[in-house]
Length: 437
Image (cartoon, rainbow, N blue to C red):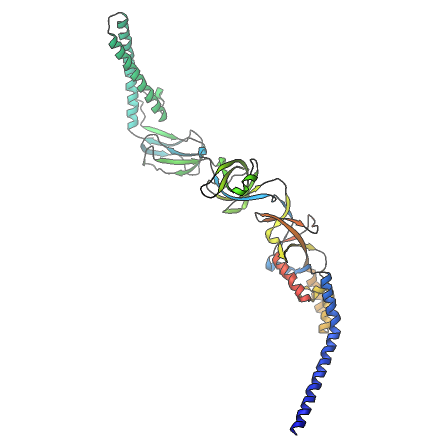
């Protein structure tokens, strides 16, 4: 009895297996042509059209732009500093010690050469003027004594020794007068205006150069001397670049080349400069050579000591360029996405996000029905979609956020390309291709 039951069970299992095998074989026979067609279609026409809805583009921040013309070919990138030449910077001091009485400028004020910046007072100034008046008076007496001694000597009534002594005294006084005159002039006092009852106890400190007041070190009532800086003046109109160029790039540098640079703390604004001098020695131990360039055009906001990043143009040719993030890499090649009116490939419609007309038919074949309302919603959704074609390009020089490109397939000058969010578009296209299989 047990053997009989085992035989019956085995027969049932074999019958079920045969039945399932026939069912699977039938399904494979009906689906096989469709799979082969999809695979053959994919091999003949690779998936290159991506569809995105407005919502998708907004959610990931897809932005469109055009190919721009940029000076990016044959360039050298170098870091450096903004500098003002030493002959356009001044530390203002007083040649004589004294107490600050007034300060007539503030930080940021523009001053002209010779303009009064501050006043300083010291009783010793009066003594110097007094010495000048005294020496001037003694010279008058010494001249009279010299003439008298000379007359006596000429008449054999005086000794030659007395004549020589009066001559030496007169010369000494004249030397003292000349020295005092220079000192008074350095103090800003006119020797011709020094007279009894008109002695000045205060002096003025004037600007040695024209420029902007950058630092004020003194304050009213403080004592300053020749070693005490009162304020600093800098002429930012003479600002230039000190670029640090590596030894390997030095042979490419020439006087007259254009430099495009941006401030490290303000990369949005681009400035221009022109190379006027190339250094002949290494800077410290950095193995770099200083290349100097005059800033041209707008200089607003440029301050001595700012860090910059510069691009030296080795030629004046321009090239088509796009933002770096507009380029995607796949299989060792580079691509951009260009807006197109072309339709997505047929095999891409199997992706639920990329349904086209025949995709709906397949959906009807799979699900068996589709309502009129769903068809209307589908048509409305289709009208809000944009197509982007994946176009291969060859990369060139990359600087300042842009990359020079050469398209394998021509791209029109007014074509709209994805300049931001290209990575998402490429991922969307890849997912569509995966669903196609």
